[in-house]
Image 1 (cartoon, rainbow, N blue to C red):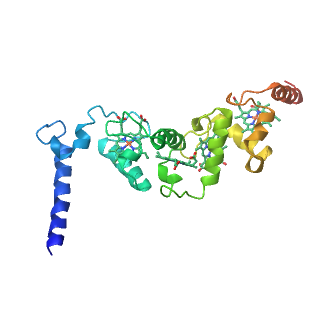
Image 2 (cartoon, rainbow, N blue to C red; image 1 turned 180 degrees about the vertical axis):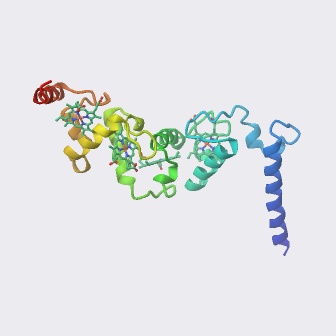
Image 3 (cartoon, rainbow, N blue to C red; image 1 turned 120 degrees about the vertical axis):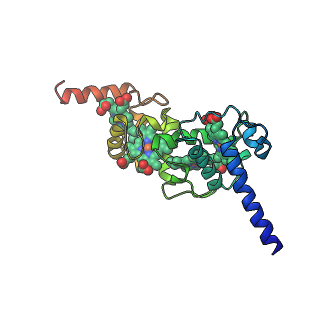
Length: 198
Ligand code: HEC
Ligand code: HEC
Ligand code: HEC
Ligand code: HEC
């Protein structure tokens, strides 16, 4: 009974502090209630991963923190001046998520496990590494491809990318140069133009 009461009390306490924090930002008399907020006066949520109003952005942070089952310091210190390796990786991951128009749980089940698109995603990260591209080179939001993405879609099929991987692309494209053509690539292009009578 006693522990039930104290749990109720703790619950109410959190609800009430939550309210106070929400409606009294900048009120220093109450700021002791949430030191994490107090030490982040310059929060701008400049990363385009964060969407909506302040509550929605905070909800996004809560979602990714609970998805990975970690504390904030798994990725960064309180005033966001120091990022761990996972934090730096997460910045890259946020870029990828924005390009795909998704959140972390599109690929992550938790800290260790992934969804069934894991292999596809890994190959995409590898392709970007080899070609020097970002996901936004080809992805323009949920279910949408850029014109270059459309070109790749054809190339993936004709060059058996699924089984042979990105190395095949280097027959005609220069490594780390955003799919610029190499000498052989230009020959192929000129031959194509010749075929089309251009
Ligand atoms: C899995 C890694 C990860 C976890 C866990 C995490 N964060 Fe972050 N957080 C980031 C990344 C990455 C950014 C974007 C930083 C950037 O783009 O400069 C960020 C940005 C923020 C921002 C916005 C800062 C700004 O002004 O742009 C706030 C506030 C924040 N985090 C608070 C928290 C809090 C509070 C927790 C714990 C409840 C938390 N984060 C947990 C990775 C994480
Ligand atoms: C398109 C799929 C995809 C999305 C979306 C995605 N991830 Fe990842 N993530 C991966 C894959 C695949 C790996 C493993 C390969 C690697 O480490 O590069 C990974 C690895 C990581 C790692 C390193 C794990 C470790 O133990 O080394 C972190 C941290 C991470 N992701 C955070 C995030 C966060 C935070 C988000 C959302 C902002 C996110 N990811 C969104 C696919 C994704
Ligand atoms: C060179 C172009 C290109 C780049 C760069 C690229 N992708 Fe893709 N991606 C594609 C194409 C084309 C498809 C297939 C779309 C289809 O079949 O409709 C695809 C499909 C996917 C899929 C499966 C379909 C989906 O939307 O869930 C994932 C996941 C994905 N890409 C993740 C990424 C990530 C993460 C990055 C950045 C690390 C990335 N891609 C970079 C071209 C690219
Ligand atoms: C046999 C040569 C050849 C191979 C192999 C090849 N490509 Fe290409 N690719 C070309 C040529 C030629 C062009 C330019 C003409 C065009 O846009 O159709 C091109 C254009 C592109 C473009 C557009 C670049 C831009 O800046 O507009 C993308 C993206 C691309 N290829 C992706 C790929 C991918 C991904 C692979 C590997 C799966 C691949 N290509 C393999 C010959 C090749």
